[in-house]
Image (tube, rainbow, N blue to C red):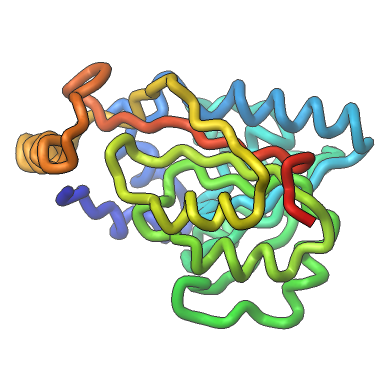
Length: 240
């Protein structure tokens, strides 16, 4: 599939261009991440007292804003930094320097790892940042994050963790599922399909539909929107 490239809006000093561009495409409207993430966080806090998340390709930190402050995605254009009194701790992973600095300034994330873990060896100092992690999340990054990143993150963990992610329906994530098979006794692939955003143009839409035809998958849901589904592996299924 020829997916639209949005790299030009991923690393500004503010998320204005990002939000304006993706708002026109109904990105995360409704938000497929919010309710799931909030439930995981609240259940985790209830069980552990505190909760720590590693957000892969965190960008401007909007998943952290949901996890820490229950700030809906559609309200993430706020500019006043939040008072960081949350017992949920978020570590962002990304290569976008300006986006990471913005997320940290806003207190959407508490710390970050600025590395391309698809190509670089994770720094030894990151072990401390990843200590006592409870959840690894990837909400829209499977186009450029593979099992290479997961293997490096998991190699530094000192706890069993939940993993939740939303791949594009019909995309090849065999490397991710192989990784989960290796590290978890089982995991749940949701039957529900969520619209991520509208297609950018007819070329992207036709490319996506052609890809579904090639891999013999049926079109599903709103054919004008790019669909995702949820994968959730729970910590108690982690192979020790």
